[in-house]
Picture 1: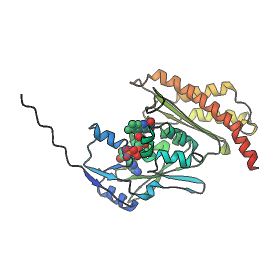
Picture 2: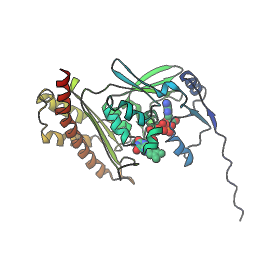
Picture 3: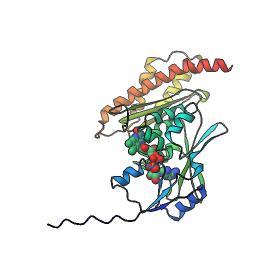
Picture 4: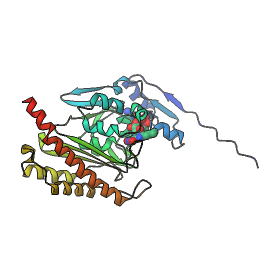
Length: 308
Ligand SMILES: Cc1cc2nc3c(=O)[nH]c(=O)nc-3n(C[C@H](O)[C@H](O)[C@H](O)COP(=O)(O)OP(=O)(O)OC[C@H]3O[C@@H](n4cnc5c(N)ncnc54)[C@H](O)[C@@H]3O)c2cc1C
């Protein structure tokens, strides 16, 4: 029997702008072009045959995307900054995101992979999302039509779907450095190179008496746990704990964990059951809160005393 000839692979064109304006013009002229930054998602898609773009838009030569800066105390993190740089250059300013970044892939993946790429892929399991959600991040997207900022909670619109229009690119994310401790917790089948079975990000904002949360791998999109946030902020304010930095009642931490799990909508899949994910989330949230509160009572008080 004759073996059929392999299908001829279609030609893949490659655009390589060197400025942000050129990149936006290229995306406007070719809305179907697939941007590529670190390539750690795009190349997997191409290699496995899930993705066969006719046009790739390489963003690695666009200098603006590789930079971060601080404006009015808010960090503007270029979409093309790698996880490795988030860890080494911004670990003190963005501790929650740096903790999440340390759990991503391997050193090779952290050297190539970017927060912009994680956002655009918008996988429910992406590790940057819970940290970005907990920190009230805004995503700056741009096109030749102009620039707009999207609260990160509104950026995720479905499984691997996001709020960008076809002619838009992610320019940066805007993150306010925290006034209190942040934590990130991830459960996987091993300690490294693993997609999260469930993940949780927490940020305490004592300057405004607020709490931020982010849930990963336990709903169609990354999402916050608003009832848990309101419950905890109310308990901390009601008992005067923000000021006293007193001990956190165990019942408060337990209920917080329960409300975080209530906000999730996980499925059974090859990595874990929905029931396991809910249990894991409640435990991770309780532990993350306990760690963050211990930090708030110790390091943060000492730091505040040093500053006074
Ligand atoms: C071995 C391995 C391990 C991994 N481990 C993890 C892990 O532990 N946790 C985790 O979260 N992820 C993991 N990933 C996935 C991947 O590394 C991350 O999602 C990473 O953040 C993708 O960033 P990138 O720059 O490589 O994106 P790319 O692959 O370049 O692009 C990803 C998507 O973003 C789009 N894009 C990129 N930049 C822009 C932009 N500026 N504007 C608009 N669209 C843009 C691309 O078109 C594409 O759709 C892993 C991947 C591999 C191969």
